[in-house]
Length: 302
Ligand code: HXC
Image 1: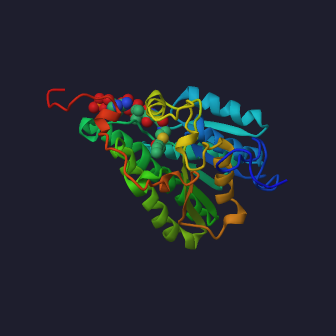
Image 2: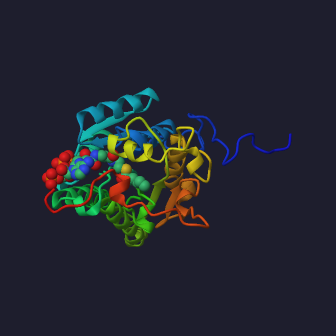
Image 3: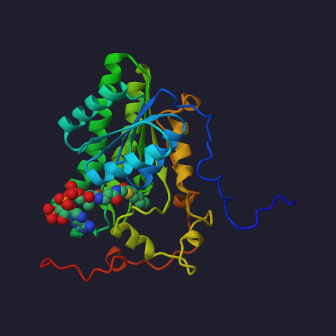
């Protein structure tokens, strides 16, 4: 055995269903996850459930709530679903009331719900901008605030994980609204970790790289499809020479909120195989966002 991997790039992770933490790490605990009915939120929720957590799935869509419930029940864990639009402070309060009534106060909060679609900045309507910032940034704050107030009142330790995006650091051409909101979320991690740390509340961020999943919106799928490698996938476009497998994100989330990460706070962990650090020695030609999205020339008449 040479020890060299057979394929280039970062080696594949252990299989889905393997655990990075001891079995039962989350026994007797509850995790509240927004947007946990689909995609990466669901994958994160399932990893907590596999480790023994009861899960509260918060979403504004009944369909997504049903999907979240099915995913958690499939791994044999307890689940409560709550309909909640995280932009609505009263709905957030009601969701935590319902969660507490069923399981007691959740120890872990994962702020996963976010809004996004690609658009040239000049095409965004005021309401489109407001909607994305309202869900992604304001919603994350409202849920964090409600969760923390209950823990501060109870004097109980807690952990928050906010799902972010690497364009919080770099800017995100084609995603001005979401990039600005995610920059706010990353900044909030740093502020709240200091404000609430003395009361035992840990706050971290978790940034996914490319983790293709069946729930990607047509908009997001379309953007990805425009940058496929010649084999039809995305592997060759990543320094890891592969995309992420969803359990890898779940392992990171369950670690960050676990007893093994108690001294990690105010940190945003990027799980993307170094893709966001990628630079070339020579610059490729600039393609405008309008061209990338197949939009015609900008006109005030449109
Ligand atoms: C342009 C759009 C639009 C689109 C909505 N709007 N979709 N504008 N292109 N594709 C505009 C609407 O026209 C409207 O403006 C305003 O946004 C609000 O739309 P509503 O449909 O009323 O809002 P709402 O139903 O509350 O939310 C719509 C949504 C949301 C924002 C699209 O459903 C959503 O985000 N879905 C996707 C969820 C998702 O995929 N999340 C994961 C994100 S991944 P007007 O002016 O007409 O009233 C992520 C990180 C990516 O965040 C990192 C990559 C590196």
